[in-house]
Amino acid sequence: MSALATLKLVTAKRPQQASPVQLRRNKLSKHLWEQIQLATNLAEGNTYAPKRLRTVKDAETGERRTIEVPKRIKPWWFTSDNGKVCLQIRYGSRILEIAKGKNSIQIDNGEQLISVLNTVKSCAENGELDVQIEAASNAVRARFMK
Image (cartoon, rainbow, N blue to C red; front, side):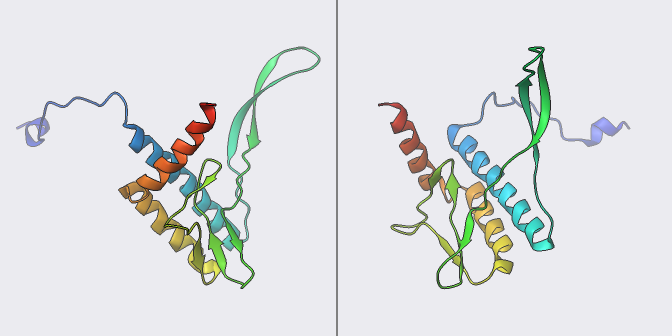
């Protein structure tokens, strides 16, 4: 008996493109993952600087080269006046309004930050922030219509 006979074989078609909603979820999830890495490394006393490729032109020869440069990642959290850590979820340059009139998540201390970021990431992947992402995306798109 062959090993192929033990597997479940089906006819399937690979989707050509993900839906726009799924692309937005993935984009937010990727940025939340970067924030989790940043917070984790800061808690351990390390720095987090992922690399990105950049093409530069040599001024003397005119030759183009691709070099690795550190990617700048700004933290989405800050310490408020009352000493609590506040986390703002960003989609591009926009801060998401998580609930009506509320744009920050208040955290008692920095140690809970990583677990809150993981919770927000799972919420984004499950589609709980789709309305907020859509609003931010429409606001950015409206600026291009002028």
